[in-house]
Image (cartoon, rainbow, N blue to C red; front, side, top):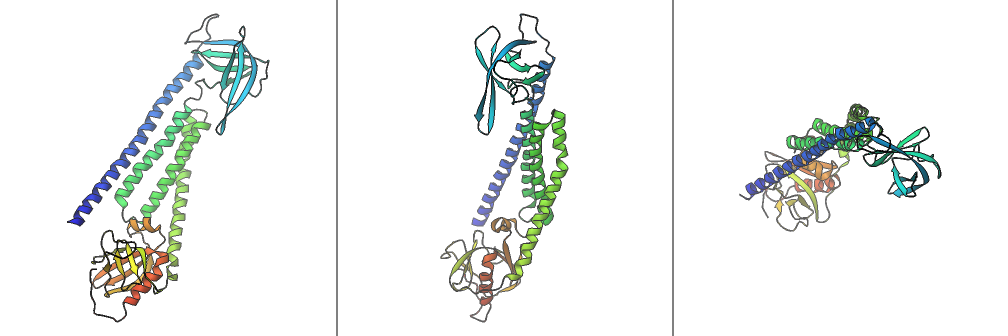
Length: 372
């Protein structure tokens, strides 16, 4: 009854985690969609500004632009975190009021002008949008030029991440707890590809001349990103294979004192119990227990358990073992009568466990399977 309740509780937790992951991915996708929706609005503002005619002399309107002469009083470089804000101080002809105009960058006008130079300020909808000096023109921070870059870049950054969250959710739902090498490679390729494409999309929106070029930069990054993902998956597989090749160095070392190590037992045997994630060594026969100190709730391993051999983790082993031991694990394959038994533990603990289990198989008292 307790096991059934625990399974139902575990299933409910997995269900909630699944819904939270799906919801989080949906939020990311909705945010990216909202950002994409603002791009046409910003482009329309720029088109309206670029197409706006000059206002008739002596009048101002939101549907036209007004250009007035001004005199430069100086420039200010204002540090702001890791960037710099560029301020141009000017006075319009006929007034003594000094106005600070934040420029979009430092070229080509800001770095060129000096105090006393004459410039032209272009107003549109009540704000200075462009500053001209001789043949050069530079947009101000209030100019609608380039305002599409931030929402497009943020949207291209969030979109792959939202899809990755859904991909991870689907992957864990269909491949846990025993993924194959192929599915692990798929996971690595998907994660690396999504991450690189997200960064490329954000970068493309900053360096592209227009929306089309930014999208082309993002699309061009897909194949190289997938290639990088495949390379990372290959490297991961090599690392796992190297770990497997080193299992031959594990030799039995009988424990000289009591130790309690983390371990996982798999098999249809009484000493395999959910939550019993430690193995007591060097204190009589080995025993499984949930107690890290190995003092209570011990399930003794019977003398009928016979060690067959030691191996590394395999693709069909439980995913929880890979997460717990980070692939740096050894698996002791045993037989207990007609039942196959697997004991997984950290590679550094394998010699002691192997020594204790093999020592237990020497002739001794009659075979028993007590529950302590």
